[in-house]
Length: 372
Ligand code: UD1
Ligand code: UDP
Image 1: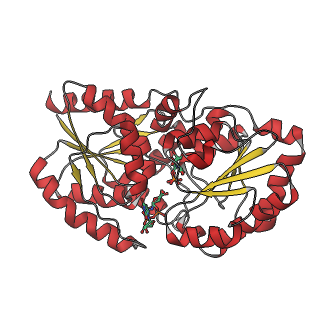
Image 2: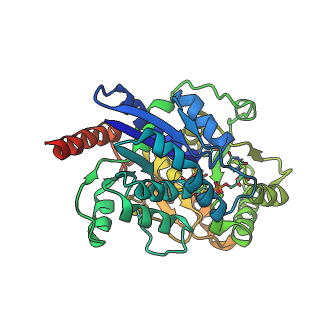
């Protein structure tokens, strides 16, 4: 059975590379990886760490690319790969333009699609944008749905998608378990040289399309106030390579003594820094799944989340994108030990680190049922 995994951005790679490893270990599967190259440097960082063998790279990234150019380039470029390889199954991940465009291309070739990280929903088509629609549309096309949680399965059922839906856990936990080490030495010089003694480290990231402009400015201003008010707080912000993100971050936070604006960290550095932080502030999806697993409270810099499980467990709080609300919520956790303690307990609603094995097993069973 030929299985072609297609991905193109950093988070997809972090969550797909452990799965590719398991697919390769399975004698009944021929595993092929095709990168769209929606991201370039940030994708390569992950491929290098997991030593993932790549057969095709469509290399479509352009500086300040638009949703249209990403989608059109993938549709055009992947055509010859699908025609040449004729895979039995195409695997896509999550909610990016890579996921949707690849699923659509596979559909045009009548190749079944397996959707990894299926069933996440906010039910607001413009938030996150365009991810909510990307994952809904990918779900319509997919034949196999690998839902991380029972809640995700219910979302699909409510849309009438009930066949071949499997609750597997999230593959990010599989990845996470291999990257975090006790005596880890950071590869990034700017992190390795940090003196954490006597400082409380806040790890922040922000990059979402709907936060670009005004909301990102408010986020950065809130962080600035926190650092100015709390002399023992150090903020590390690995800044996404999007120039629209970099410009704002540097304008508002650049030059502050206890704010480190660093290049995107590789995933090992990132996960180990997360495990050593006292607080995470982020608009990322994946980080909302990772930080709870190591007992670090998360303030979500968005107005909604498609990942309610950790919110229900009490370790994640959605605080929105207004300066005052972000500042007040961070201040509370920095001053009220009881409020902090309530949020800082390790929970793992997103899996047990065996999601990839389950996905491979379901793929093989599906194939067997189809050929019996
Ligand atoms: C994409 C995904 C988003 C995901 C995010 C993860 C879509 C529509 N968005 O958004 O769901 O949360 O990835 O990070 O699929 N750039 C580089 N080098 C890189 C990567 C990006 O220079 O390695 C710059 C380029 O100028 C690029 C810009 O960042 O045009 C934006 O990249 P893009 O993939 O369009 O959007 P993201 O915000 O990264
Ligand atoms: N990440 C990383 N280096 C960074 C920032 C994030 O390795 O500098 C990892 C992070 O730990 C998580 C994933 O990238 O596994 C999240 O990606 P991102 O925030 O870009 O996308 P999202 O999850 O929001 O789609």
